[in-house]
Length: 317
Length: 273
Image (cartoon, rainbow over all chains, first blue to last red; front, side):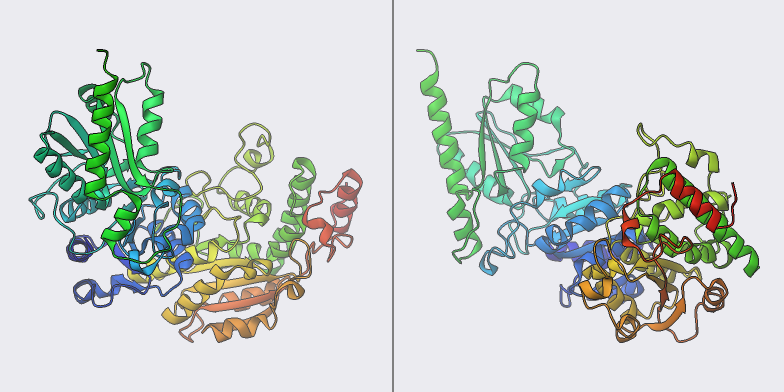
């Protein structure tokens, strides 16, 4: 997703003279093309994220469309008050991009993990939270984000993730409307962000066990596509929501809150697949980290099979 | 011109103190220490137009020390951004606009940034100055900071960035009244030598008596100053300036005047009731 972001923002920088790219001393050589084509609108803001975020708000209030790029904890929680006051309170159309989200930078340790960013940012009034599944969703969503007159948070994974959509370059999406990845009939797998390739693998594994899984990308966590949720909860008796994020406050929380707000409690069972309320102090690669938290494809499949079995057993004989 | 600026500042002091008495709005000492600076900026220096508050080519004034909002409200009303009656008749209990900090620009014309959480206004101003450069505008940005506010790390992040980018369209004026909320500012954190700090961060620096309107005018009419750097002006001020029993008494950071104190203050300012 990282390289697709660099490529797409370079194009957007040429197309739209309001676009300014602010980097927190990261992305060595990654933005060479942007610099070559729109050099006066690239700023290395140094390792000073609070200033970078407030500056972006000031630029947005002066008619520009700043896009901030650095590692997720530093572009979110590090400068949270600057996002809250400078960006959201002023309704400043700043695009905040976090890279290496979730456990992408697993070996860098918890300082560089981000398992609470969605929870925190979605509480801020007016903030759109966009968590693309792959390069295709990222490219399309970034273009859509620039059309919004609002703050947008974009949660990127790393580079070379498996592709979920077949059409990287001519994909389209609407922020706030989910995208169907695969049709299925027995169970619904909802995912958000960089966990989607694992969800698709889980769907493949379920198919081998004779379970037909529908896969839906909720790339926009806020605003939540409640219309689509209603439809999916009517259609399926089991919905598993996967995210590379804490069980507290992310997509699972948003869906659960929506569920209890429904006039008639839906009969559908929600299976929440997310990270536990703990820091990961053991070092390992991304797959290790996902296995540790039970959010990898195999764990998703097992949780779904288990839940299906429990549902079958609870049926009146 | 200078005489009329001083007269304007005297009238604004009267209005600020009356407003504090009437609405029980605090931070009077902070308002009175920066009112000569704000008066100079709004009535002589900054190109702002109440008839077109969103003119993209305007100069921008940011009150980074947002708790002096009551001073800013009076200045903006006097300048004609909104009717004085709106300000003095604002309902402080049931949904008025004029609180203890500036609201966002879309809620009140003339405001450039909602400040009050310290350390936000200057970095936003740096973004505006940078935007002026990118968009090819000659407009300037003036940010009024508190000395206590210079405790915030974000101020120095912004100072380094502006110094590095040589943003000569940006001016900081530090209202150096030697107090923060609960203590002498130079004794809480190592603020001194304040002018040298800004110089070390790559700024063109000046010191001035922040109540000497003609000195402020002379300095500020010379912006940009030709050195190709952002400009920092350390303005030495007195908290509560203009009323002897408020001057340099930090109780007036929170206190509001009672009827007797209001009357005494008016007499001192030459407004006999």
